[in-house]
Length: 130
Image (tube, rainbow, N blue to C red):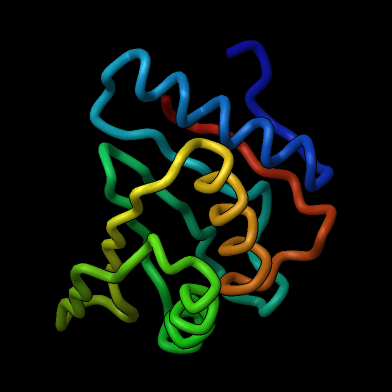
């Protein structure tokens, strides 16, 4: 990989697909994607998405989880496997099994950042670990 960030939708999806490809080629434990700034809803935490093997993981507030579940209706090859709600944490850790190619994963990741986490179309995303 030579580029680690992107702002327009097509470039972000290319970045996400390249990140998944690099992760698979290197047989790393996981790869991590993050947006550049906090979400538009004013939440102080920057969300992240991790992918490893066939598992997508992220932390969500209750509202984000509702939007994520709605989005999953468009991705039948993705299913929630586990929801953890630790008492000491606000929100839910979500693990999703995804049997998809790099392009479909990239599309899903971009849609999660926009639909579930509330980022605008021109947000900047980073591949922070591969």
